[in-house]
Amino acid sequence: EVQLVESGGGLVQPGRSLKLSCLASGFTFSNYGMNWIRQAPGKGLEWVASISSSSSYIYYADTVKGRFTISRDNAKNTLYLQMTSLRSEDTALYYCARGIRAPFAYWGQGTLVTVSS
Amino acid sequence: DIVMTQSPSSLAVSAGETVTINCKSSQSLLSSGNQKNYLAWYQQKPGQSPKLLIYLASTRESGVPDRFIGSGSGTDFTLTISSVQAEDLADYYCQQHYSYPNTFGAGTKLELK
Image (cartoon, rainbow over all chains, first blue to last red; front, side):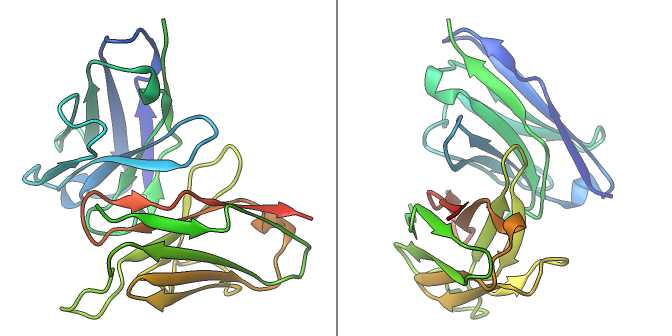
């Protein structure tokens, strides 16, 4: 069974940093591209970043480019999102999802990031 | 960037009705190479993660009831739910994965009348 479990969310002050993790199981992680998608409270879905299986291709939304870094460790079956210079508008539930240049067939349950002083 | 315009933003229905949700992309999602449309539909129930319903515009994901029908090509797409059931009350999103940045529609909230 495919499982994606996000962690690392929490309350952080504006301008600070936070690193999210997504632990994958139930499939060969190194064969799949991965994504971060976020959802602000009461709002819709926003794609954040994608990374190919070997990290050769990386894409970011303009809203996070230069502040967020997506990465992965295939030996640890883990996807990461390093977030710096956080803003109040980054407050959201952050999901990881499987698939690149493909629909997102599998999603985690999300980890909540709250940016507030 | 491809803009996805979804309508309506909300829809009040009675059980048993047929509903239609529209999604329009600012650029064609049809690949000239394989004639496939890179458009997906997701369902999100309160407190849950999104669930993939339809991909390639009209292919139902495994386990999705056949009352969910995706159609359209190019820039105009539709999700039809025939004979709506109470369990279908949720938010629905379209998404293009034709190019980066991937973009979602703003969503349609399906509510009980």
